[in-house]
Image 1 (spheres, rainbow, N blue to C red):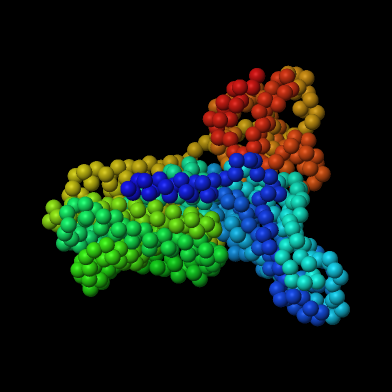
Image 2 (cartoon, rainbow, N blue to C red):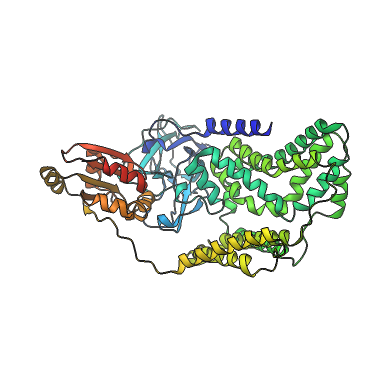
Length: 589
């Protein structure tokens, strides 16, 4: 039953959120859904222009303050009669994303999903709009997904001044040349980045499966583990045979799922409030303090578990399906102190999507992972006399969760600390934790299989630390000449194949190719027989416009391979990995 339900969730979300089949154009990324002046603007009076827009799923645009001069910021521009003066624009709350090391590291600030702008308006004393007179609202932006960046573009609409009105209709986006920074593949937002990357790089099925496994792991947190005994006691007191107990267990798990899923739906519909809060330094510091407090509990400085009266009342809960449902709902509340901080990354993913269905499905899947073991425990409740002793192995697990919580606290403090210091030290912190838990910690030594497992973790951590600190010679990079039409013509005359890389300084997939594809030894070796040129489309000038028009460049990176006869053998937009690039190069004569 659960596998069927989970498959249904996967299918539903895939159908709703799957990207469109046709290639996205730059002026299709953002749509202005409404623009209104409320209240109506009167002579000598004030009002507010409210602009609602949406960025299509799985894409995002730079914020108005993109954290680097390399990136082109989003701008809202208002034009109209001189009798109407716009004030300071209020931009939506931005989301901060952490980039992979392959993309150069660092952070980017982006807008995604539904976005709202507000502009105060002041009318002159002689304001008297003529019929048809309107304000023109333009959003200039540059968008990316996890694979490519598109050229800068604009979308516009008009708002009538004579009466309060909605958008008169979006005008065609105005293209300019260039490209921007990468999306989720550059590193999903700071928290929950690993899950976001799985969704972005491996699809919905593996993404939801990873969330399901995460739910299973949450059973080992100190708030959840004590509830296992309560659950066994509850179902052990139920009558009616195995089938009825199984149905009760399913209802219990559905109670957990409903509690979690409601959180996902609320966050998805919050309109950016959750993400805005996560940009506030005071909120980040407070959250880090909560995480450190929970970590202290995991290290045994104090005990954090459900109150005894709650455990006793849960064990004596009313029989029947309603009792099982209420018990499941209650378990979601009791588990919140431990698992809440861990699922913050998922909450940010949900808010970014803006989809209540995705929020419901994501947290429903997490809850299924948390709750599925209880079905087996319920079926075996009559045969289990006592739980296995927690002993040293659970103490070791709790210490592991404690170190994870400390790591999350450091991560959330990163925006508050200058120069991304926390992000830089986290890999070394993780390696140090692995070495401590593998070799130094006293817990888990008495049970030999567990000792082998923890020792293996220590070996892996030690190898990772050695890899990070060992000085390595920089790999040979593929060298490119600046794009030159004369060089291209001479290569054709000499019957030499040509590799042209269309890129831009603010294109993060381009950086990823520079750090992965163009340093791969096999790619470097094979590409040496090509005349290699790089067309830099960073500048938004006439030369860039001519290149993008002549070679029909829709986004960067764009890789073009020309064979020895001067024919275009391959043209691909987006990131190309080393193996794919090597195969393409070998196919060109």
